[in-house]
Length: 138
Image 1: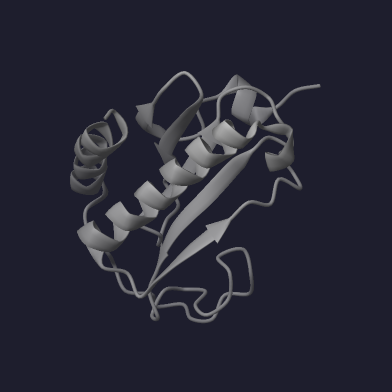
Image 2: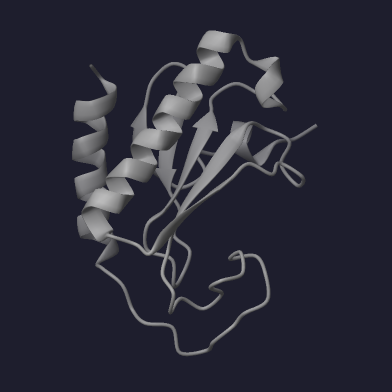
């Protein structure tokens, strides 16, 4: 069996430790889309120990808080689906009322064709890398 999240980083690497990593997802129209990915192949959150689940969620909430601070979205979506890729990972997605799919999920039906452009990705990636190192390496 192949697994995309075992075989590939999954985006631009922002931070990692021995258990998990945070990547930036280059999804057009969605500046501020990150994934928190468990490094080893585990299908469900309940397959993790209590301590590992707590660590994973701490990282998810840290990414959410940083996105709120750095780019002030209208909403943050947190999703852990794993239907196509049964490997523990969380989507942390900054959302704006005028993005292409709002209020639907980004995988839902497009609501508007003329979504507003957002902050520069390269600058945001650098800020996220810096802040994640400070907050998660304590």
